[in-house]
Length: 200
Image (cartoon, rainbow, N blue to C red; front, side):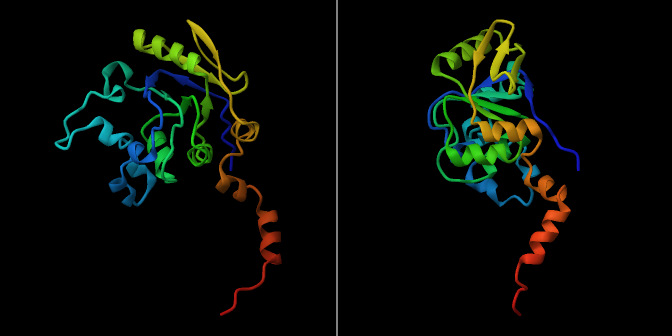
């Protein structure tokens, strides 16, 4: 199978600020009974966005000026709380391709990297600059460059950081474990041959 290399993400940004955005808020527990992750499209931050009767709370994600955004601008400790892999899946299935925040919960970060959704860190000052530009000019097109490690637009170029190993995996297209296995049938067969036969 072909490798899906991810070296950049481009598009509009949407502000989802605030520290400790936990996975229970990213994807409410009642949505976890889905059969496939595709069913999570549109559910991210559901209770943050909608009242019990389905009416809008006016969340930035639903603002017309942020429609079609591909990059979330978050806060500190993004993705904390319970270790549900549905959280990054809900974000990605809803159209977001990358998250920029001050820091990430480790399990959320790993789950996001495993589905090809870059999560990069920026300083508080850099994020405030990005948030200010996005709020004043929401149609601004941003580019998250994993090679240069920058988040840039015509008005600013901001440095971002990411651990080397997941960054290289994304850029080399080696982030998908299933593709890795399918591209190495000899290695899989050799390992299987070494394993003891299951007892009946």
